[in-house]
Length: 115
Length: 114
Image 1 (spheres, rainbow over the protein chains, first blue to last red):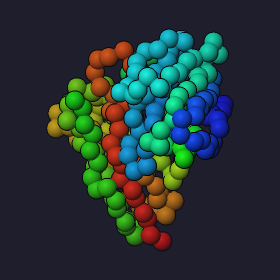
Image 2 (cartoon, each protein chain N blue to C red):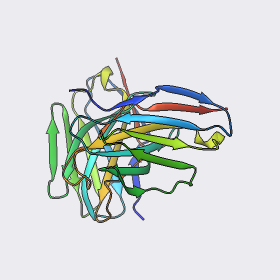
Image 3 (cartoon, rainbow over the protein chains, first blue to last red):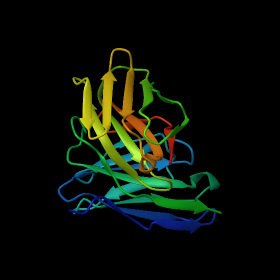
């Protein structure tokens, strides 16, 4: 079985632009979460979606939005990019919404550089 | 507010040595703790998941322990190899809330010298 996949792997944008990142969870997993990892830090929670509904949002501005599709894949959108948005964006999938008692599996990430 | 701390921030050891990585958390109300490995510029690979009711988990040369009451976890790596060089992250899943949000430490960068 394929693991969590993300696209693109790398992306370079300029300030003020918009970006869309994509994630496909492990087959059978219905929950997708997004994390931002700035260099030298641990990942920070951005969103969780389960069964196409937003289940949680971290402390990120409204420029960040996401959605989940009927096949459980997900998109993360960031508007009006700032230099500080440069980071590795990670997607994680799990079967349940709560994550209690189960491992969460992460994708390889999308490296975003904002110039 | 839950805070997760990992000490040391970086560690260099010779090949073959046994080593311990530390993770501490401020609020003991957790469902589980997960250890991950991250290679430079890459995603996270899950190593071990310890439920709050468990004391330890083992996988090959790795052993993770959990002392929830004291807010501590350790990852023991036996007979280290150069291929173990990576950043190791711990993360906790807190009680409550409708999400499966993980709270991460900042990681320990491990270098195993051949």
